[in-house]
Amino acid sequence: MMHSNAANRLDRLPISRFHKVTLVAVSFAYFFEFADINSFATTVPKLIKLWGVSINEIAYVTSLSFVGMFFGS
Image 1 (tube, one colour):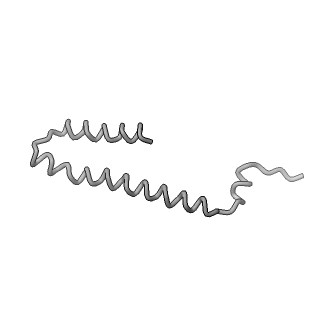
Image 2 (cartoon, one colour):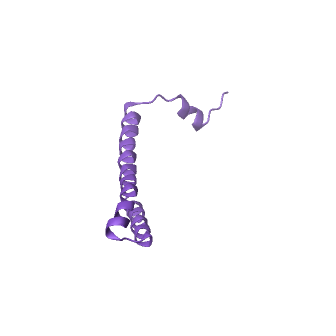
Image 3 (cartoon, one colour):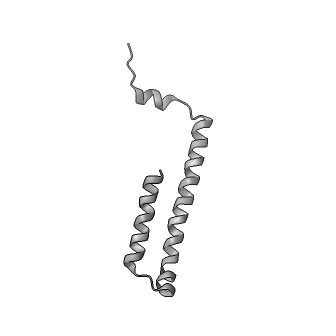
């Protein structure tokens, strides 16, 4: 008698529409999240120059954004 485990069974299953839709939704979420992080990173030098914001304040805001992502997920 042939024994199969769960991993082999999952490997044989086809990729369904649900998997494709989930992949697209997660991809959009990652894209916009990283765009948000990168837009702040490109804005920081101007904030330091124009508003006189310190590196410690920038680090604090950046840390708070990650804390917000943690609790928001």
